Length: 110
Picture 1 (cartoon, rainbow, N blue to C red):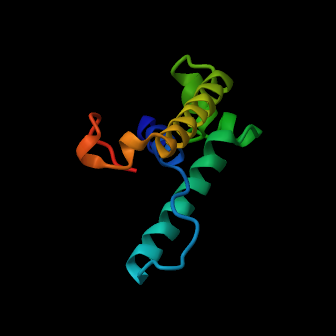
Picture 2: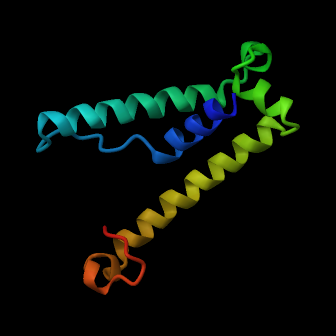
């Protein structure tokens, strides 16, 4: 059950991926489409606050409550992490250090 939650969080934090399809080959479009679908499914799973989520044994809220974790606190934490990740990406796009990988001390590329 924990694997369901872990995978959903990872898929959500990975984000929707590339949204424009021009210039992508068919394999890249297919991967982008699958990533988008996983992101949307994860988003729905994590932020579903219905009775079913609280009562179904594979529901996000049920699993977290079984572990003694407040689902709403977890959702807030996941949202904060997403905002931080987006802010970091925006900052990297403005930092010339990330434009040239040979100068990047963090080993990341733009």
